[in-house]
Amino acid sequence: MLKYSKGELGRVFVARVEHGDDLLGELRQLVQAENVEAGVFYVIGALKEATVVTGPEKCVLPPVPMFRNFNDCREIIGLGTMFRDDEEPVFHLHGALGRGDTALMGCIRGESEVYLVAEVILMELKGADAVKETDPASGVKILKFLPV
Image 1 (cartoon, rainbow, N blue to C red):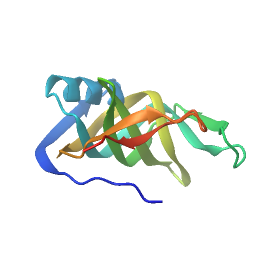
Image 2: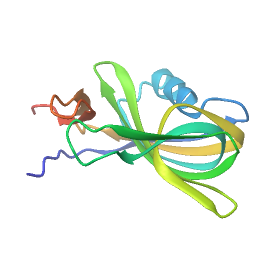
Image 3: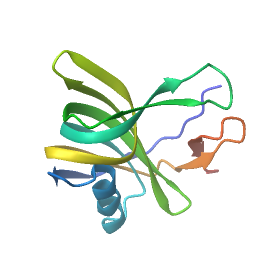
């Protein structure tokens, strides 16, 4: 059954993450400094290296993720969300990453080093009453809606 809440757009942040910086680490600093409770963000630029989850090994619960690493500088276009888990921001960023004729798509995890520059648009979500919480069946942090 579909579960949802509604909210509205708050502030919009335009950011540049610079060469050698950790993309998600810099976004974490931004949302903490600006006290952003929830948001959606877009990323365009390039990453020198990162780890990407490209799906589960099998369609079972709990999932066993397939990890792919790269360190060969890839272009990125990405879309992500950020919701809090207690007080900590939890990022969920999916991206398409390409170099030459090779493409990789998946969920970017851990450190992700920027190559040259990454531009980010972060749109704050206000009043959505949603958080991330660990789901016992999957072991994954999923979206949960707070009682109104």
